[in-house]
Structure formats: structure tokens, C-alpha cells
Image: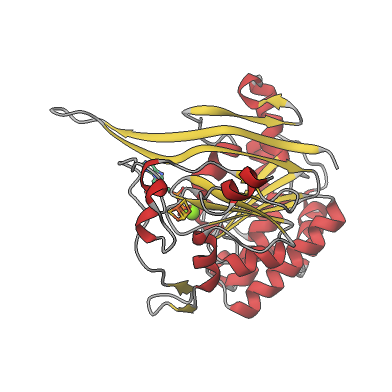
Length: 323
Ligand SMILES: Nc1ncnc2c1ncn2[C@@H]1O[C@H](COP(=O)(O)OP(=O)(O)O)[C@@H](O)[C@H]1O
Ligand code: SF4
Ligand SMILES: [Mg+2]
């Protein structure tokens, strides 16, 4: 396999300026590095607020990093000309949890599917044929092209979101919680569709979710984020080791009374991005902490299984020092 994407030491802060006091600096993503091979499905998992969507925007260059780099096919994206960035926007596509948050609700499905061509200035001769083809690719009847979004179900709308992302023949798709607002049975259909499309169209996915079991099921490799950092990288066959990953694994999903989503309740809270605690960021919630955890922040260390790394003094580092 060849590498399609490399993310190196990516960080992003948000600064809020004040008239009379020092600016507040919020760190949403901190020192994140990983590679993605062509054809791979890489999962990114973690609680709400841990920096997943910010990471997605940084990868797609929808937002500039405060530091660090993104390499596409070996080239630093920051060095791309305007023209190259435009081509990159065709090759990299994003699918959101709510696909219609970025589509004009007055658009019929046909217009929603043709919009990416207009935005990117791509001439299209056989518009109706392409619309029918895209609908067919995502398992929808071409007659739906004349409908409005409010006439579609949640699952159908997400299929339209995926079809829009496919319109310009991308090579990499970043899927940000694409099934989070769908019923479980519809979620399974969307996952099967994404799996088929990846194989048929030779796509690479970065799949973002707060649901560890879904990510583990669907993805070749799982990146676990906590408070803006990577705390574990898990190949498919490896067992979760970091105390936070194990906490996610043991969490029970229950229906949220305010929505149709399933939510998990985890003990405690992640540290605020405004303060950088000394020692391990997971310290306050960890049942295995020792004195070392209070003063030294653990870095990712290699575990016995190839590609498995963990940032914890009592797992990865211990194994690495023995090796
Ligand atoms: N534009 C922004 N300005 C200030 N803070 C932001 C901005 N975007 C995100 N954040 C903060 O960064 C943190 C990470 O957000 P996000 O990447 O959306 O997390 P996730 O997708 O994992 O829920 C959150 O606490 C969020 O409030
Ligand atoms: S380094 Fe210490 S506090 Fe952090 S996860 Fe490991 S055992 Fe827990
Ligand atoms: Mg998010």
C-alpha cells in the first residue's frame, strides 16, 4: 500500500482576545501525527469536544493549523498553489453528520448534486445522466432528483450527502459522524453502502465517530483522541490498552431523551483546553494512576503488536522499556 496522507505534529489553538486582560488560548488539537495508506479506513474516536472535527478541518485545509503539517501524496499542502488547492478540494471530500447543514433547503436533490460542479468550476456536459448515476451509486432511485430535502428520510438525506461528496470523483473522504443522527438499522445500511463504495471506487476513508464499537467494526485502524491528543492507535486485531480506550469500550450506550441518538455516559470530564494540566491529561479520571502520572505526560510508545501505540506510563512505556 502507498501512503496517501501524512499528518505531522498538527496543533490548533483558538485565541479569544479581550480588551483588558490577556487573551484566552484554547488548544483543540495538540501534536497529532499519523499516516493513512491508500485504500485504508482509519477511524478517529473520542468524546464530544476532544478535537475530532477540528482535526478533520485541518486535514482538509478548511482551517490552517497553528503548527504542524499535512502531506498529501508526499507534498506539504501548505506549499500548494491556489490551483493545486482547488484540485485538492476535489480529491478530498467531507461528509457531515447533518448533510443538509451546508445545502440550501430550497434546492431540489438535482441542484444539490450539481452544486459541487458549479462551486469547483467543473464543466459537465451530461448533467442529468451524472445526477442519475450518482443517485444510483448511493442506492437511490433517479426519480428522486426532483424532490426537496424535506421530502426525504434521514437515511436518504445522508445518501445524498454521500452522493454529493462522490460527485467530483474524490480519492479521500473524511466522514464526520455520518451515522450519528440515524436509527441503528439505517446506520447499518449507511455503513454497508460506505463499505461497498470504498471497494468499488478505490476510496480511502477517515471515519470519525464517538462510538468505539462502530469504529472498531468498520475501520482497519482506530485512533483514540483524548483532550486534543492521540492516546492510542489500535490496529484491528489489537486489544484496547489505554485506560481511556477501555473506559470507552465499557461505556453503555442508551437513548438520549432529547434526540434519536444513542449516547454514552462516562464518569468525569476531560480537562479544559484552556488549561494544560501537568502530567497525564487523563489523570483525574484514571483508576491506575501513580505518582509518575502526576508529573510526566506520557508519549506514544510501541506495543508488541505492529502499529499499536499507547500513551500511558503503565502500558506502552512499560512494554517499550522492557523491549
Ligand atoms: N472556532 C472555534 N473557536 C473556539 N473554540 C472552538 C472552535 N471550534 C472548536 N472549538 C472548541 O474545540 C474543542 C474541540 O471541538 P471539536 O473539534 O468540534 O470536537 P469534536 O468534534 O470531537 O466534538 C471544543 O471544545 C470546541 O468548543
Ligand atoms: S499515564 Fe497514568 S494517569 Fe495516564 S492513563 Fe496511564 S495510568 Fe492513567
Ligand atoms: Mg465533531
